Image (cartoon, rainbow, N blue to C red):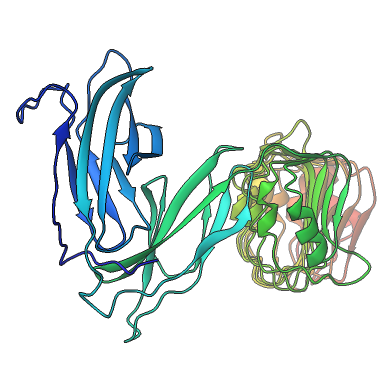
Length: 478
């Protein structure tokens, strides 16, 4: 691969020859005119005018009589990986159906690569993870003798898709399955650049029939090597008997559907779920359990619907649940358990779900329970809120009129239960305990005086502990 240079271009000869009638420089739409818009030591870009036809006109591009691009709609094309100081002949044909409407040639000569010693060095681009409707490409680092900063741009099918990159890889989404693509990575040092090309073919559909357990990185890599696109049963990443060594799920981007549930558990070295983001079908359940370094949940951003439950337990680095914000409700209400996620501060990503049971416990900095506002029917199956040190706002509970199971509030900073004043009935127990500041139970008068607690009334170890009869008699606060 040759080093390239944007400026000090040496164009020895540019000849435009029309294969239509020998016309002059008329702008008639039947005349195809080509110009070289960029030329350096190892690449050249040509552009041409649009040709009008009775239907869509496409273009074939040739280099030295070899077809390099067939039936493209674009009006430009970049030749890469050329040799320096070399003559080339390019041809463009305008095609409508099987008819060639016009054709024109261009001749150019690449420049010598001797203008600067500070061009980016040669580097290699390749495919890191091959997907079904996406792919991740990677490249080695380029450099200069004076260690100038290098940035990278990525071109796919001659279109710029990313620029000013400093990382050495790029995830490319929204591709077509079983389709061949080509492109190149361009390393820049100011105006100087060097190119490295790549090509790949996205994988066709490939069904795995059964449940998949991926308990080690080797098992992940072995599964990825088969390019499966669908799983007919659960996908379980990690293990429950010992800690897994999984660190990279990127190759799983081939997957677009998993039937049943998706579980990520006991992965002590896993930091991101990137690789799962193309899974877009309905899931029965999601469980994310005991992943000490996991902080990026973007792999769950493609899930269409959640039909049953979501458990997020013992993940100390997760801060937000925004990755789930595109997920809608299934045919039944959803059970949510959030437990012991030390840095979790924002749970609004679940606020679009119609909830059934809610368990929120053991969080250090979580300050709101706004997801409960999503209960469209004003009822919950179970409600358990305990030991959330920074949770002071219980106002979403004012929306609830019926709890079909137990109500438990424990180890809170509440001083009163006014936000429960609209609660009309519980089919289960009412458990209020170990709330060291709680002195006012008058928010329970409505449900107690109507005798609408079908289970047990259990109140103890609060700042004030009124009996059931105390509340009936109006002695609801201290």
